[in-house]
Amino acid sequence: MTDTSSAASRIALNPSTVRGYELSIGERVAVAAEAGYQGIEPWLRDLEAYMDAGGDLAELGRRVADAGLQVVDGIAFFNWAHADAAVRQAALEDAKRQMTILSAIGGTVIAAPPFGEVADLTLDQFAEHYRDLMRAGRE
Image (cartoon, rainbow, N blue to C red):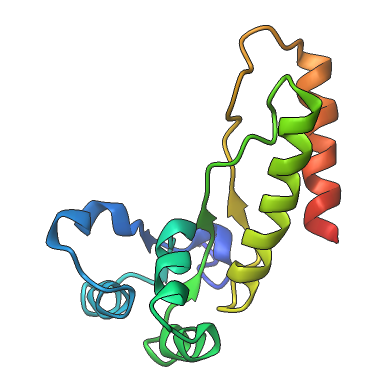
């Protein structure tokens, strides 16, 4: 029997699948709940747009919880693996900011694929950069 109580095993809506409908983040939460999903994976750019429009993250977090959903992760693209140290450092600061935003609505996990100029990196360099990303997350 599968334990569906953890975020790792919840079936969640990636809101990009309904992006063409131009729904607000609140409407996306409602769609996820109505469709029977257990969670939602908000894109950080959508959360930032919500904030820029005057949205309150604490209220959105309550809305997610009231809908019976869990924020299973957030989706972001920042240059945490970039070959250039200055670009990478700026990206880590951005990652911290985005992780703070996500945590304000109850999220504890962020999907962050290797992004940036990474073609010539070795596996050891990737590991070092990933370690730095994990340290940023703990902060």
